[in-house]
Image 1 (tube, rainbow, N blue to C red):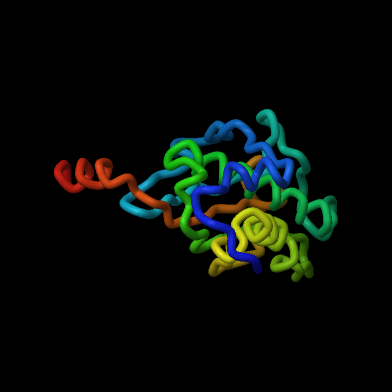
Image 2 (cartoon, rainbow, N blue to C red):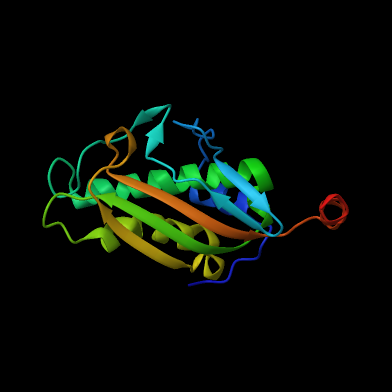
Length: 170
């Protein structure tokens, strides 16, 4: 992977022709992302575009592995939009952990390849800072019939004044 300087992520997105989507509206009682200290945790993000699933069904049955990999990329973009809404994309220091859930037909064991859709995107955008720990888990069902769901944990730079405020209110 290549090293790309932190703080230049907006420029990197432009360079790659990537536009972050609007933050996906939660489908239940949660928020899309939460920042605590120097970490941002996103809720699981589905492959939603304009409020609709880009594809639905189980991987290995109604959804091909390649379609699911593309859906994982859409989930990753939604996760980045959620992160951006609470901390700003240019504050990212490191993508720390990615968890991918894949709605799998019986016998489907290609979950790591599906979740690569997200992992490869993070590498393309963040270079070395996009290398992360990861889990790729096969599940029976996902919300709304989605084939994949992605969540992430990212380390971010916290503005010194903001950090002082957080420590004085804790």
